[in-house]
Image (cartoon, rainbow, N blue to C red; front, side, top):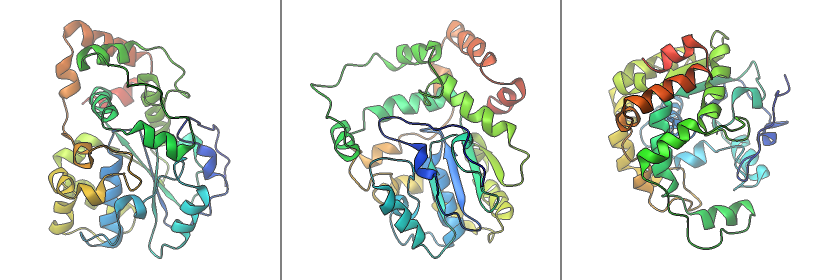
Length: 292
């Protein structure tokens, strides 16, 4: 099995937890940036694999986040080893940071970076950082949280931030590095790219396409309906990634789920700056696909 090219580490994640993971035939690895459709793709995988909208356990139990430091590695490995069905595993690590096993399938969901960033901004206020620190063994943050600027001002600063993309994966350079790596692998037989807007426009068609790629039964209308944003929000207690209490409000995790909100926040000059930045960070064919 090829060794990952890079190791990604943060206060809450370590991609080295993939080292030595015992893959099985048909495993599905869901590699996405934060707020780019991770939980949506986990739900799609659960419905396609299990064939029922009545999931036997909370989604985060069925599809654990393998590189998250909030749970012991052995606990996650044991849970996955006990699963009798095809496994579908969450990671926010780019594909060059996970083992690429020929027996497994890898799916990367791409969302317009401006929409992803706006969702990230709102998600930040919904996280219980004291609880996260407790779970990951870090000191709890001191004092009240810093007041953040309004979302438009924050978004402009996010576009302009110059950072190391491998250290700041949720930055604009980090997002486009993750997607550029996946884009370069898109012709590999076990790598699949999915556009967030395609899920919005034709959820049933995308689910049938993935089922065909992964040699799973084609989903009926009841499974497609169970994967809609509205239906998932109704079942937030079972579907939000929060079995250990890191969200203040599980329903708020499914805030809007649409597209275009990021672009609407920028004026002409701000959007021109965004276009200038992304042109320097990713190949034009990827940007054409991403921004269509």
